[in-house]
Amino acid sequence: MIPASRRIWGLVYRHICLYRRSWPRLLELGYWPTLELLIWGFTAEFVARPQQNSGIALGAALIGGVLLWELALRVQMGVTISFLEEIWSRNLGHIFVSPLRPGELVMALLVVSAMRALVGLTPAVALAAFLYDFNLFSLGMALLLLIAALFLMGWWMALGVVALLFRYGASAEALAWTLAFGVTPIACVFYPVRILPAWLQPIALALPAAHIFSGMRGLLLERHIRWAEIAASFGLNAVWTVLAIMVFAAQFRAARRNGSLISIGE
Amino acid sequence: MGAIEVTRLVKCFGTLRAVDDISFSVPEGATTGLLGGNGAGKTTTISMLLGILVPDSGSITVLGHNMARQRFAALARMNYSSPYVALPMRLTVAENLRVYGNLYNVPDLGRRIRELAEEFMIGALLDRQVGTLSSGQKTRVALAKALINRPALLLLDEPTASLDPDTADYMRGRLEAYRAASGATILLASHNMAEVERLCSAVLMMKQGRIVERGAPQALIDRYGRGDLEAVFLAIARAREGDPQ
Image 1 (cartoon, rainbow over the protein chains, first blue to last red):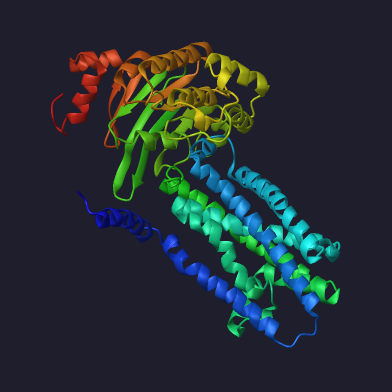
Image 2 (cartoon, rainbow over the protein chains, first blue to last red; image 1 turned 90 degrees about the vertical axis):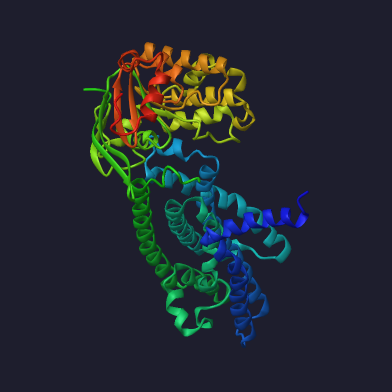
């Protein structure tokens, strides 16, 4: 008769083996607590400072930040999860031997992600209006520019994650869920860039998100369109998109060379 | 020129020479078997023929297209089936066939799906999710998908693995009928030597990344003085380097 402790150890050992061989899984263990601490720590620091704006305006900026940042996250996850769906269903082998070009695969993933993001966020936008009297559309036509910039950011982040999936296969699956969230503290969704430590500010400013949310706060708190911030977000998006395409293309070529395109689902 | 022309193909993974300087030609309209034990290099060779793996050196021409430069032109006229690659389980059979019909730009897709449904007796399965099908039904659907674009070249990896003898026999019959009616070329990787004897007019035997034997099944049986192709396969697989045949 095998003692219960031996059977329990058998299953514990199975999970330890899994973590030993997957650095993304190992990294994820400390990832979320650290991330939550950073986001809410910086937000608390911002709120604790003397404010020129009313609590209501500040609340609106927080809710607007949640909704718009969620859009970028959903767009990114829409691409990567759609790609993972093909891995999980062991269907990539059929797709890659069809006449579908890599660029067409990416375009299809982008379209699906846009559909997913719009369908997924509609209830949240409606609930924000119903529960918190927050009308996202009060941002006016400038909202369209912010949304376009966030779509672009979600897409290039997703291209980067898919490139990592080519490189590391399904073992990098955790990145699909975690990578974009990891950007949140330096995306400055809930607080201005000046709240961050000085050494972190240039990194935050290199991302379109810091400019997009600065633009959003300008609209909500000052009723003023910060055109320079919006222009900066599109400029940075262009640079990051080119970089993401180059990384994606390089990883796809490498996957065809080293055979990981065949074993990507394993 | 053959449907497939392979010249001095080499593929290494680290220090392993998975495919070691092989050359062969597959004639148009013929069914050719690609045989070998596990790790012989069959899957690596097929992956390179399909363009999802880039060779270290050598050249591949498929249906007149150089795979290094014109693989999408070739892929549009090819198709592939393997039990190790699946179709999305939550989609119905009809939805899956529509997905691939669109990927291969099949004209009059609805009619093509009805033809395949009749040919592979999957009409009653069209509205069922693939995940709910038995192994035999899934194989029939996979083969229907492989023929959706009326391919001029069909690459099949173990097409009847895990099928009962009756279903496997039915599938072989459908493959023979398709080749006879369309003049398509078939390259078949299989461990079932009876299947290879029935379907293939020529075989290529691989071992340790090299082609060690080639010819018509009966010619190989005669050359090795064995009763069937399975015995020939065993003789080649178990022979040590330098052994007399």
